[in-house]
Length: 579
Image (cartoon, rainbow, N blue to C red; front, side, top):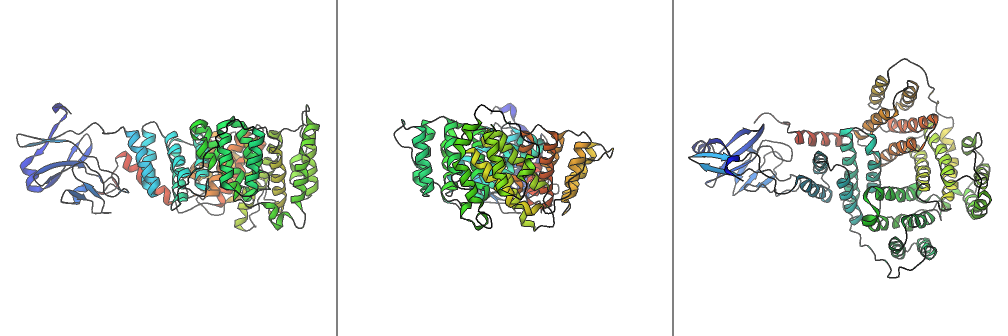
């Protein structure tokens, strides 16, 4: 650094006498220390929580902050404690008994590289404050989306022996939420995603990925058969090797077909999670790129297939009505039903969704079979089932046990995942998910008995902005489920922009210590909204999301406090009294 960048800051004799002092340059407080006949300059704010470092101790070249006892190597600022981060140092020079320093030194590594490395540290050590700082720092330097997602995916797929789980799924759906929320909430979304990956992976053993077979000439049919057979007997290693070979040998759409086939060979696997987690992994690949990331991402989904609970093994799917057998019979008929519908264009019958919400399991199966034979596409039929599942959440009666929210939620998640997968493959096996999802809708029927009062649109004359403000306030109170639904309906009736409404719902979600299912549900409601054209159906989607969110708020908001601290530190605000 040239001498012209240095500025005089204090007399050397005064610094020797005092041992330390604080100077202000470019609006930044810089601590000077005279130690072992040398002068050192560091940012006076401890990088952990901003405590003034001049109140610390210097001994044998180590600067110790007195608040949380973070320790730093004085000359270069490296920390002994990864949770604290390194402290910035400033070059100094002595001229004519004056101390000079460079207040704006060139960084040793690009800021985006530094923050990516710190994010990796935060994931490895499960340090939420470090994660928040890193997400904010990356966003400040124009890299607030791809790098957090990629870094967390690389970490989560490597260090989670049991495969793709709730943390990586949360990350995926925070990535889907990203474009729908405001500026600071984009940072909150990424913080929530990486935080959940770190928490879910903490203490897990690393995964040791298998290898693809050498033969790349294997057909889709052969690989599909092998993969399904290995999943059937719960052979995770054999299934993974087959899947990795398929990724190497086949186009992405055919790999998706293989995964969907295995995920629907059994009914409603892992109470919706298998299909949803596979869908979330595929959504993540759309953000990161197939070529580089498909192998580790999709290989990590195999345990969701080989270790899954199969609903045909559950009494609820066998008694008092053997709905498992009804599903399998419909699966067996699929080829003939699809053949019958070839070349036809389906027109959804009036009241079709109400049929799916009915109490007659056989009538529901028959309606779906008739739809396929009449030409209903996978996208059309999965959409209808998803609309029925959305109503189960929108109609959920608050006199049910609280845990039953998750019952209707899981059905909604499954149906939504099936519809999104129908956009990724036209595999016949997608129709299986229609039957399974519809039967889960059927099983949930008692949770709508009676149905919650449907939010009736009313004209109040209020401005949409005021309605949104009331909605956000609603999430500060417990149990305001029906009120939240009414306010969403009122916002639609007032002609408010749904994009603004989604931003408020996103704010309500991201300020909370939300659990996995709440992240899943609100993100799913947004995606359901985006998949629809009809205003009434779109209203149902956001009513359902708002009601579920209201049922699960407020929380302690500990993570919001962490995010606030990280934001204030990044802005250079004082968290403590003046030095």
